[in-house]
Length: 501
Ligand code: NAD
Image (cartoon, rainbow, N blue to C red; front, side):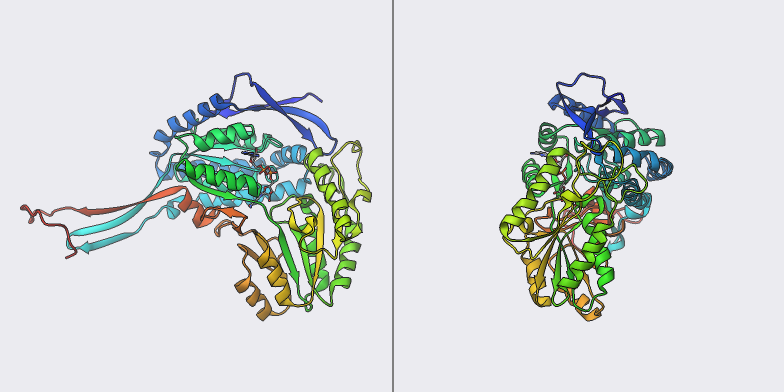
């Protein structure tokens, strides 16, 4: 197989320079280096921002009707190329093909939402707010904005932001994860085909150097970041210090509370799906199952049985249900939690290291099978840390209140779920739980595109969630206009301060 070379996308074409630094891009299923990605230095970031600045002057003045036509064209192209994009994601991220299609579908939803931009940008109008005076509000784009994304959703996470940013008249510089950079370039090609003017959508690849330059660049007006909590905090603090609008979504430790009256088969299915889908590399993955006694033993048994049936193998194989982890280093880090959990006194009920890996040519891939810890307690590293792999921890509690307290004491607040057949208990949970996204008998409650996505506490820095109405608000700034047009019967001089009348 020939090694691929991935470079930046600036002003409507691939960058033609020679990079000083590059990173390896691997196929996680085989463990082989499949290509190299250029890492941007300050000059390349400046070039991309320069292209975005230049394009902004034209794009913000393109009519809403014409911008919408480009959005619709992009929607059609994305829809018809979804299989191709999914294969790219599988080859660099490792997730299974159906899951890659799923992330594209969720991104597509936001594109479709952004197609409604004429409606979303409508302002308010008050006729005769004062005698002969009307007041109205308009929302205008910010300028060039940066989108910095994590490895786990190389298509969906950038699409949480750029469709709305672009529809609203901004220009964009995306800095994807260096681990799976190709999806962003593919999306750039689709934008070009859709008729988006050059420079409205740019991609720079790289690491901290590129991120830091975007954070300090005076022409970048806003930053949407998604990644781990320490980097999200850093991006928020640095970006706001440079006077930018920043939304920085961080890590998670999502708890699923199972009450004694729940349907245990449904709960066990949900725990396995949400715990091990995408090998646990989802910010909305369930990583802690809180079982309210006396159902713990029965629930753990049902989960164990289901885990044994999972087919773990390359994401490109149709029968694989779970793929490898993204890199060898990440696999090793996740695996280190298995020994740490045992040393801390948790019960390793299912050891993912012995799960069979199906498929050919997988001996050097970044594998770890689904793993289950029981009798986990706060304070153990398997409980405290975001592991971001196929490791599910079961915590036993004796009451609903104890479970709620545990969830609310956790520093993260991204997603949570309650499983119960008691509507009153579910309603109490959604009222009392201190988490941004709540599922009721739904394990991965990612809101649809016309709501907004965002966690609380250490899962989000800033006050604006992603997409939906929050997204439109984030990528525009408001202006209120007070107008008077004198009719021919008025005239004369009045130096008094204008008051309502
Ligand atoms: P990461 O924080 O390592 O990287 C995210 C982005 O930041 C990448 O583009 C990376 O190049 C850049 N980056 C990394 N180190 C940096 C540094 N020191 N300075 C500046 N930039 C830096 O995250 P990841 O491993 O790619 O993704 C997994 C994490 O993302 C998990 O913690 C997961 O929970 C989180 N995540 C959160 C959400 C959410 O909605 N809250 C969604 C997806 C992923």
